[in-house]
Image (cartoon, rainbow, N blue to C red; front, side, top):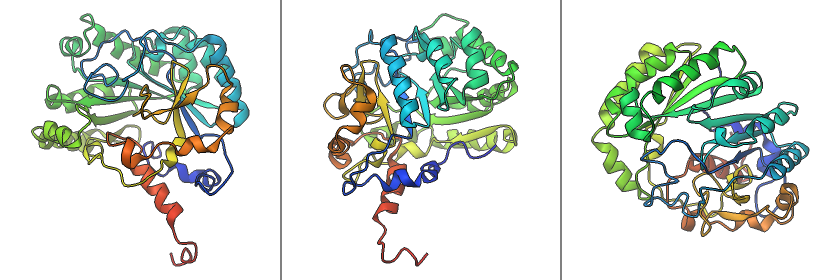
Length: 356
């Protein structure tokens, strides 16, 4: 298994990187798109950033929104024509509740576009599980609880949902397709003592990769750090134990617990990743990123409700520079480190690049 989580993937697309600066007129297709097909969800997670009033994410989200079938089929046609490399379905809501997801991934399976999904795992059954197993690249299931009782408390679902989702994952692996099965464990001050046991349980049922990440509780970095400070050492101890005892050639643990607890301050004034990876929302709006989705004030780039996606993308390069991270992105950002690497590459003095 190669590196699944690495900041260096973009450097396999050098022509795209070189097209990014303001002083070039070339607009190339994005590499990766996140599509949020629906805002409906059958879980009600207590920490969900889209449904928590004190976080900026999802400020303007309408829960009933979903991408109309005809528009979704049009988007898939456009991204295939444009040469987009990959799509991830995510929330908003639960992608597997989208009524046209099966038709969408069947259509994608006949293209060269790779596809994946974030999900709570409750709908990973039947024909759509077969399509993902045989044609998808990866599935990543979000988890928090470590047994039926705790899981129900986190997500306000009926008792037994945790066991059902573990069974869905186990059955998914039995299909023996090529799709990698991952889990992200969201760490907070209730589950931090159960990390090792949960990771072991996930490995035992056949999960390929586990990502461990902190629950984001505030738009203010210092408040997040204060929240996690009391449990940080214990979390690291459990991650290290799991890594030393459970990782092998077929099972990966990616420790993202430290990476998201840095300052939210940004020094750069434009965002390269806006042109590399952005979001199509269930409201048919284009947002700069997953950390600003459904935020009209700072994250909205435009709408494709009355225009084809490909026409919107190529019609005006100025829209890619309307967001200034040093002013508009003083919050959690999953692409911050990637942006800094790309900007450092682009800022290298051309007269000195030979002195490697």
